[in-house]
Picture 1 (cartoon, rainbow, N blue to C red):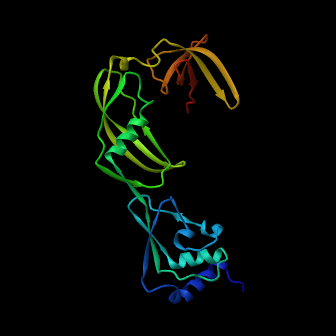
Picture 2 (picture 1 turned 135 degrees about the horizontal axis):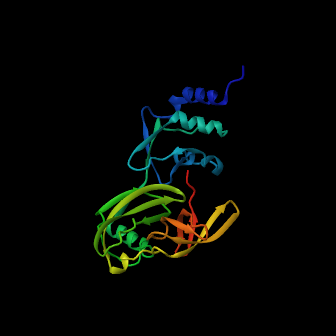
Picture 3 (picture 1 turned 90 degrees about the vertical axis):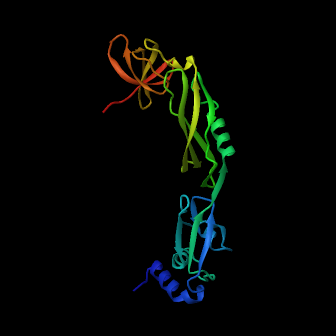
Length: 249
């Protein structure tokens, strides 16, 4: 009966166990990326074999154990018959990066530079002294909840999200102090504003004239009365002149 390649690899790993490693030896490996590659654990492999994905790295301070047997199986599945000397197991950690308060202050200040609503000023960023985040991020996104429409000081929080491409790695909430001027009391689209009401169905788009019936901000959903029917529909305000109908269940 023909043996399964995976079962054969397992058997080889078990048979070769004593010659592959020192008893109970665990190697600590720190990895910068979001995935563990075979080349992170075994050196000297060809590039296509070294890139073999062995699963995710821990997200933060945790660890992950990958056994010698798992590595041997992966090597044999990629056609590597001569197995190098390996430890009993690998303890994989995610490489972390320490950010100082000044680093976080700068991220928040730059991130909010063009995102603060009209009449809103950033007064103070209350960053922690230090924070450890998974290394390897390529982008940091900064989001601030919409402040209320009133004047005066306001305590809020910024959400910093760290991304590696499209994969979210870490999120950090940073308290901030804001100052709202009288200009902040004004909505982006006051009640009674005339807008272009848009209905989109795939590639088809229908437009009509409408009136916003409540004070609203860009990005929010507001009822729009469509002319000349007089019917009201919920619509998302894309800007101060365009409202796109929102589908309701």
